[in-house]
Length: 389
Ligand code: PHB
Image (cartoon, rainbow, N blue to C red; front, side, top):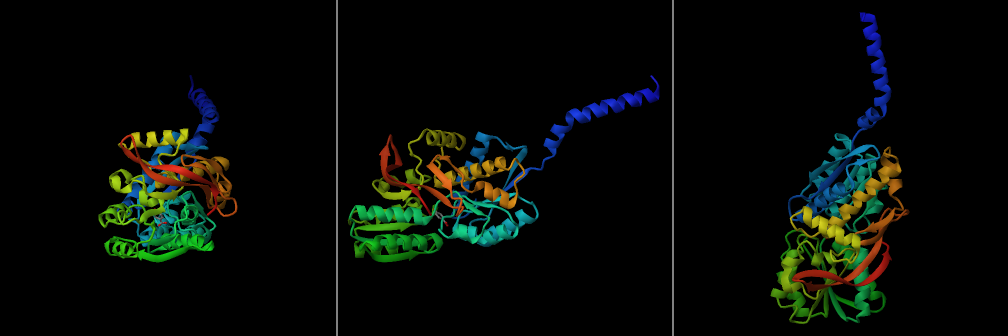
């Protein structure tokens, strides 16, 4: 074979390969779709980071990491629940890593700090945890899969009225969601002539409940409505019974963070009978939730998923669905548009991302802590359908 013949054959082989290999080459060359996940992995809100991180991993294990020809790459960064850090990290993720989506945000101040970065960077940001009602309206790039305090506190207030509970006090964490909860609760109770007889705000970080609980004991309301964020809420239940408020006849009610599924079993009998309103209980009776709880536990040493996990799992579902809907091409506002109006079954029940507000519409449940098979659960005893934020 002459040299010329050889090179002609080589050329033919090359051409044939180029034609055959083109689609897979194109696929392989599609850039990764990057999700910048900002969570408190350390500090007082670390349980939120742990839950959401585990849920994101579970979603990807359940659904694969190739979506519409793009490889999903999650870049997890710890902001310690410090909003200045959330902002700096978001900036780095948008400018240096060129992420396609931001996600996470364990507390309201973090979400509020990231909003302007999402707007400037034209980068969608999926709020998986933070819950102050007004957050989503602060940037057209924000979408929420967690919940709002108006949903939980409003539903709790309506229950209080139905139960004809007379004198109620409130105790909330002194920042966005706490103030939101306090206002919503009071508004609903007093709309029909009820009365909130005292309002207490406790520090957001490292609260010592003792002096406040003493004051409440002296006041002796029929019920105490509480919002404390997931994480610091753990110590409240213990102190409530240690100070004898339950024996004094004060009924503890509140946002479901108070009987957080992540730590409910550690609260012991003190939690029995506590009534809360919330969008997720690990004991929600559906086939999808049973599968979710079992798979989450299996992958995480028996850990029980809480509402933060479900916000993370559903947030990933919104991202995957939007990327598929845009055939893997979606960027910026196209992705936000693809998330608007999404409705699907979540482990918590049916949910929808409002096409108008980009905020979550969902069922809110009244739950009561019960012991079943040796474990404590938030048993759902009533449902209010499709509550808007
Ligand atoms: C919030 O900061 O928005 C927040 C944090 C923890 C919760 C609820 C709301 O449990």
